[in-house]
Length: 115
Length: 115
Image (cartoon, rainbow over all chains, first blue to last red; front, side):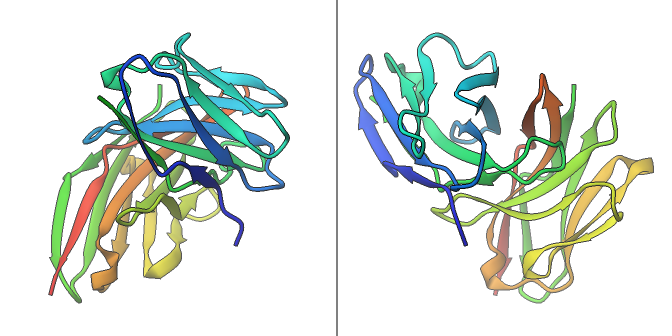
């Protein structure tokens, strides 16, 4: 069964450093997402992406965050200057459609630790 | 705004016993509801979803959930727990925001199975 794959599975970075989290969505999917889960808290929506542009973003997704689909297969989340509070599990997800009842498929997550 | 509340952050049952994980939603429009499961060191996997076709929804691994509009609930059940069901379970409501589908998650319920 096709799946969303994410790399790295775990990354430790120093505060202030740039981090890029990578994802390969399911191949025939058109909509891409990033969610995050801070330890002990809810899974939160960060951003959705369609047709090479952001379609919706949360208030968490400030100027230090950016997303890109550089080559038609990868979908990346960049955190420009990491803060301690960016430590979280970041989930990439994708879907074929954007209807409310549509299934969103998640990757296994990238655990980011900022020290 | 839509929201989901999961009652009980931890549920413990004996192997073979009934599993009941509670989810209540708040939505100003007919909701689309999902249950995801996260096994240790894995990503979020869809268990089942409600999209208004039938109020009793059957999912994978013997789980099912019943949509009750009068109670604004979408509780997850399994008649007989298995050790492999130990995981974290997330209820979520889906919405379209400015054309982008977004999932709003509950806080999750960690299910422990006692031998």
